[in-house]
Length: 324
Image 1 (cartoon, rainbow, N blue to C red):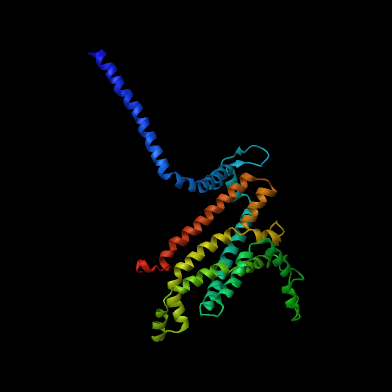
Image 2: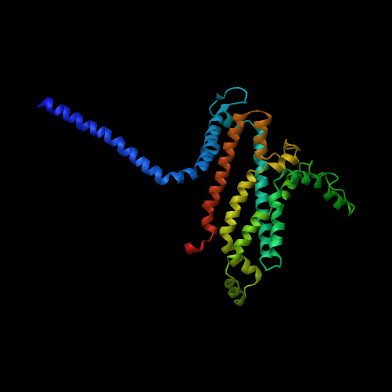
């Protein structure tokens, strides 16, 4: 009895063991025939995501816990880089202070200028497409090296600004080399790049029904009251979108500070942006591990600001489909 069952069970089990892979291979073949073209089109994105985004991100996180100078293998140091940044590095605190001042001044002022010009263009100006292109041009050129070099010439000792001041008999300061004014020249440059948020504001203004303004005007509401009671609330989602984007861009600002300060954040670290300090540590001092830690700290700071914007948006951003 035992000798009869043994071979039969073995045979039956052997059939199951060979049938399962055959079924799996058949399903994989059918899935490949059905979804293969889709995966083929996704292949460039997958290669870019894993090769240029995910793996460098993981590598950067590992390097942030090491002492690495590009010439020798990374040496694990734990949280030493983070401890040094928060408790010993005075330039780190200077870079944070300069960057916070830059963000807190440049972002609101840029949005105010962009909204004012968008409202002016929303009044049915003839040739509006030309004005849109002209006003958008600084956003395309503003982060370029050429504009940063031009900015350095405009605010230099013998620049255009001081020549205009000299026309009224006054002598202007050295805007670029004076620690009290150097950062403000970069803030003005950031405000000048108002084109991108202006285009988004203009698109948002076009979505506000004109009937709402007409009804409010018939009820006696003046331009200022219509602006604060109608335009701003209905434009709140667009303002929120621009605020988040411009805040992230401001934290990442690098090229203007690099060119205007000569690459070292001078004078007296008054233009030492955080990204510029990160660059100095990585490619001038060859402290790649510490630079990686600075990059992750910047990521956390931007994430906190973005999270705060989203958390507070429920109190001032109006979405029509939510009925608030």
